[in-house]
Length: 88
Image 1 (cartoon, helix red, strand yellow):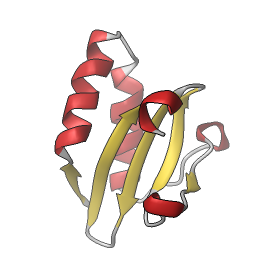
Image 2 (cartoon, one colour):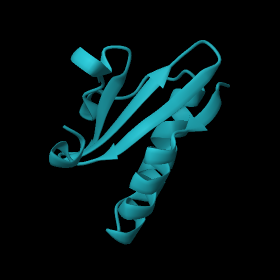
Image 3 (cartoon, helix red, strand yellow):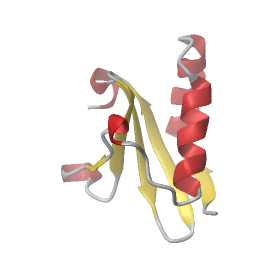
Image 4 (cartoon, helix red, strand yellow):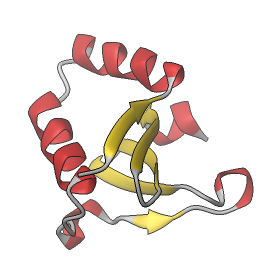
């Protein structure tokens, strides 16, 4: 299992998501699957990003609720969490 690292910005995004009553259980399930190296169902639309985020990946927890993360052999780095307009 990879070590999970949460960026300070992700921690703020997480608190905001809780206040917005987002499905935190779904988020935790996805994080656990990523940390354990399991593949995600196609519904999450997991894909690599480009530009300034070229070493990161993005997935859709809901239609407009996104998780930006980076996988290394030993770590799962959680970078951002939010809507398209909040993140880009």
